[in-house]
Length: 498
Ligand code: SF4
Image: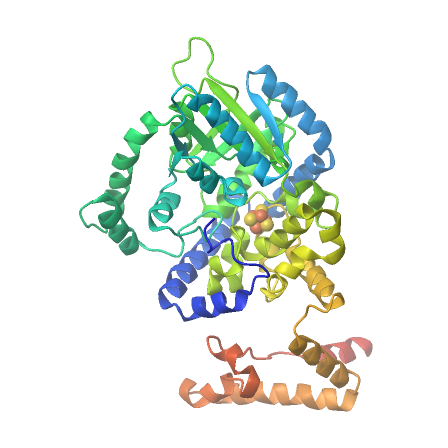
């Protein structure tokens, strides 16, 4: 697996984050793209739903929660209905098992001289289980057909965003990769670049023996999967090869098409500010008699890989995630450090809480007792300013800040917090227990704010926006926040005298 997303454990986030903050191109690409998407997301929800937006989020939250609370029942219903329509359903407890199932399907076709090549559309769960390395090791050549994933594949790079995997690259890097790897002529024109990739892929779709995809939703009532894409690559990967395998985490189940509408309204708007993805495809069984397209064999691989453990934990809400990527775009930390800094294919706020939890759940009882998941990712719960932007952006109302705080507490209880954090909190407590000193400290902060306000030249006041001494790193790439308006103590004493 790519070391960018599968680091040695325990994972130290700081060196990667420092490198990312110094990388001016990454700052520009990730900063601009996330800011734009976040702004557009707010705009499209205002325009299309206005005050109804929150009610829509509540419906989506409750619908997904209902599905999680009835997962066993929905799983049974999905399996029965999928098999009725001719699909084969497999259950994989671990990522390794999921890969082995796919390899045994491939081997059955290799015996007939096939299954040497695979076309794959974008899927986070196949990244999570390491399907590509497993296929490559078995001699099955796999082509990523999502344009962003394809560019990363030929560059030996890893995705850094759930929805826009090559957010850290631009078209110049793409042009150079196409010249180097595909022998194409140099062009930075996006349409021409897309046509080059298209010409490269078309023949490979036709020749492929296996198609692989993920799914955005599984419909229990219909026994089918729903796949949302913008490039149509899924439809080609399911339409051409004789065998198609859908890998999907079990948390993607909902009751059925009757529950789908709120998610389709929220998913594309939250991720890319589109009313809908360009393609919303439904996969219902293999090709039927008289049909000209579609796979002769359709397999669903239902992946647990820790999800049952998460479901049984206090973090079960995390399984509501529909992988829209909105919390990444809204997060001030993700915007600065990019996706590779998180050491997992799930980056940003949701990755910071989900990655350790999935690992803990996969480790079984011993990992649960020792907190192995968190012990391997001790930096992730602190990769947040706790500003709450992720919660505000989340279409299924996952309270990520609550879980980040929960993990910080667990780290402290296990003695895994950095010493400086304990010292800072001890200093704060010492100050808070001395009202006179506390008032003086607040007074100093407010004096600082007034001094900043009085200076009309930004250059003259620049020194006031920098923290000196050991805290200097905090203001190297941002201004010091300024306290303004009424203080809490002033507000409270006024309120008390009413
Ligand atoms: S946690 Fe919420 S905002 Fe983040 S990817 Fe999942 S659904 Fe989207």
